[in-house]
Amino acid sequence: MTPNSASSLRFLWSLLVQRPGLLTLATISGASWMLPTALMPLVVGQAIDTGIRGADGGALLRWVLVVLALGVTLMVAAGVLTWAAHTLWLHGTAGAQRIALGHVVGLGGTLTRKVRAGEVVTVGASDVFRVGGLFEVIGRATGSLVSFAVAAIMVLWISPVMGVVVLIGVPLATVGIGPLLNPLRRRNEAQREQLAQVSAQASDIVSGLRILRGVGGESRFHVRFVDASRRVRDAGIAAGRLEALLAGAEILLPGLVTVLVTWLGARLALDGTISVGELVAFYGVSAFLVIPVRTATEAAYAFSAGHVAAGRIRALLRLEPELPSPKHPKSLPPGPLDLFDEATGLRIPAGELTVIDAGEQAEALAERLADEAIAGSVPLREVDRDEARHRIVLAHNQDLLFAGPARAELDLESDVDVDSALHAADARRCAADGLLDERARSLSGGQRQRLLLARALCTDADVLILDEPTSAVDAHTEARIAERVSEFRRGRTTVVLSQSPLWTAVADQVRRTGVGA
Image 1: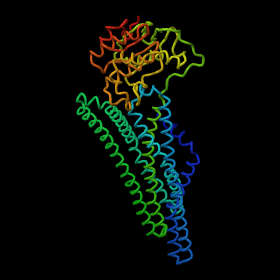
Image 2: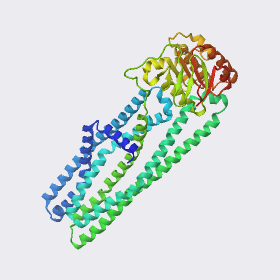
Image 3: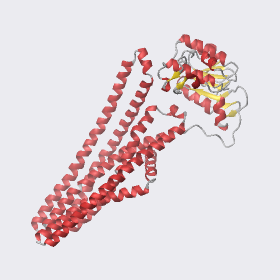
């Protein structure tokens, strides 16, 4: 068992034991539901031998009453099991959802930098329900195990020879299904991964639909989405084929055992070794054993799907939020701050505009500068997080704009004038309408980017780190923004991660990853 597999099982178990009474009720009701069906063939066989063949009306009536009692027990247990199983499903689904979404909320701004939006959507819309599906089948699965044990004792009591055939044949039939489970789990994982990718792609398309229409890219992205959806469909078909094989195997293999038991029982009955009632009991029990095998297969499939889902949820839970504040924090020195990145040896001078060409490492470098660098000779991990976030601000293009008045979105109650920040970011027209819709989707990508830049400027941070702040605007607009931001932030530390020569032209310092001052 791999560490990730063990972690998934621990997560499922920790969720399950939160409701021990419900788990016990599902187990007992599952056994009470399955046992009457297992005992019915034996009762019918006894009724035939003692009541019908023995011409004993009183005995026959007694066995008929036993059949009625078993039927009532089955009816009541089925109702209780249905309630317990459905409640377990609700507990598993809602519990997994509450834990996952609670952790997502705790991650805060770390979430968007560490996980795709489609992954979170798939966890909340698919994985939690698979966990619930696993919990729902527990009562029936435990009932199947108990009933199989009782049925085994019954057939051994009637005829050791036939009992051995049943006890060997049925487990072999179940084991024969086993080789299909690992491939099914792998195909479930493949489908789950494809589903997360297509969910992320759909989210990106929806958020950028206005831009796609503006540049005529709808048809191209439609083709890409159709192709991604086709891969999800193909993965689902591949998993479905194995599910079909499982469904066929769960009938075929136990059915072969039933045929063998029936043939052997008929021979023993003809020889007088067993009675007609015992033959009926044997046939009924061997036919009944198909039900536990089918339930075991259902449980195995539910476990495979639930295990994969729990693994994905655990992967989300392993994401760590921002570093907590130290117990004895140090204070940053007042005024502009210099930064030093220990990983690359990169040094950012205080009070200047530094442009860094970091290539593919830009995002990772930006996060290190904001979270792990040495600022003013003080390691940021030793600084109170609130102070660090107030003094050093990292602005991403993935940051969100909320619905509401545009000026309220930008006014952070700092000493910065909002109009001045809008002018520096060339974003006055972007805020002219006054109101923003959800995530400002009615704006183009360049307009949203300029509003995000204006909001970052309104923080009045001692250190402002901008990751590709003008990647979605044209060259003329970018040149104006670079000049205005350079003037607006004069005397304060500003870091721009960009490969644009327009930013290089206004920079006080130009750096490349791995090259120090």
